[in-house]
Image (spheres, rainbow, N blue to C red):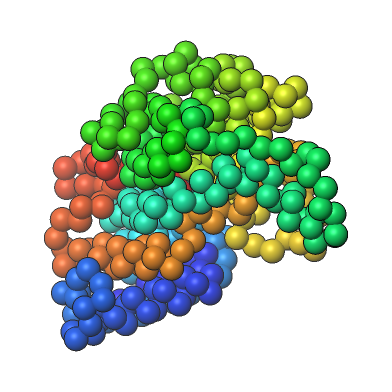
Length: 364
């Protein structure tokens, strides 16, 4: 079986190849399962993303392996199906870039990696909070130029502050545990409360009235759906405690960029840290240092001294990449065997989409 891997970076090639080799080795016990189907897997790597312009390169493959910024629209899915592709393997949690109804109608197998090293993302969110709060990014640049002046670097002690976590899946819970360890009061908002979060935080019933007005730091960890798109907008930003800091390591589309620029200009919020951006598809995971970037909103954000933008790297640890590769091949194994896949997003035989609560993307 040939698997076409799109948006393949050097680290994708390394970890997918390494895990496939280990899973195919009957003497290896490094990964979760060595009962891989006896189908020989050939990985074909493509550096570029999957789109209507590149879908023809999946010809001859039985499956495609894609990432967050690949496009799996109706036209792309139809082209994949026509070329013989029958399985779509998402090596990420998010699936808002996949037209699931069309995939179901075509009978395509679609599975994601619902959770991978949630601690990796949570720890990165903490790194952003601390960097933004204590101005270590500015201090680093100053010190390299021989400037050791402390003016403008004043931060706040996290101990005793209130941290709001929007979305309390595995990543949100991991962050709650860390912030509790800092001595923070932790508040959570989620339509699906969990007992795990209650062990380290307290739920509130309203985002606008009970969480945003009292939190010194707000961190987003929820999926991007029609109901959550632009959940951070003019109205909700106006509800935030003046001077509070906002962190997003989840999905860029949760934040209305123009609204948050306005909130920064008028000092409604005290800082913003982004590892994701609503227009990241055309930019992230590529080197544009020699280009003139045409995204005016992103460039405006970069001018604020109290804004940090990273390139969607919160997941980027050795452990997470290993988990992602292993889960991706477990999903493929289920497809090859024709057995139920717990990470399946579509059940064709029952004629409806199957989206489990624990498969909802908390990061992507």
